[in-house]
Length: 86
Figure 1 (cartoon, rainbow, N blue to C red):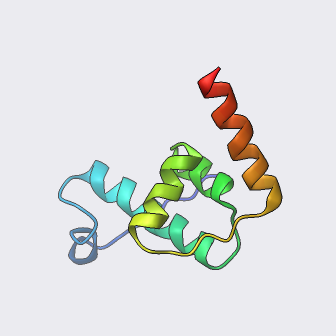
Figure 2 (figure 1 turned 90 degrees about the vertical axis):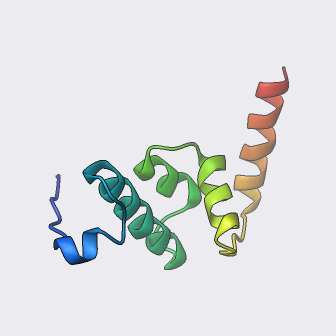
Figure 3 (figure 1 turned 45 degrees about the vertical axis):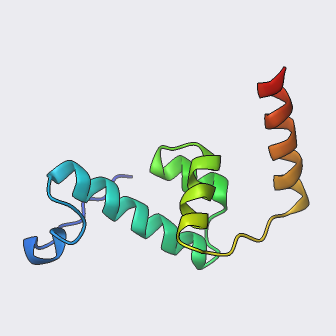
């Protein structure tokens, strides 16, 4: 399913100056809210935004949004780091 959300111009300008910025930033803001509400994990939120999980976590950190990690998430992070190091 795909959903189109119309944002009146008076509100859209708060998300950016170009249509692409508005789309990207509105998507990120709604994703952050889904994460805050506990509806999505960092992995699911990152996937929806089209960015790496670590990048989404950096975004949360920049916004000072708490990120309680599960043991599984920490293990995934360690495995990912080991793969990158070689």
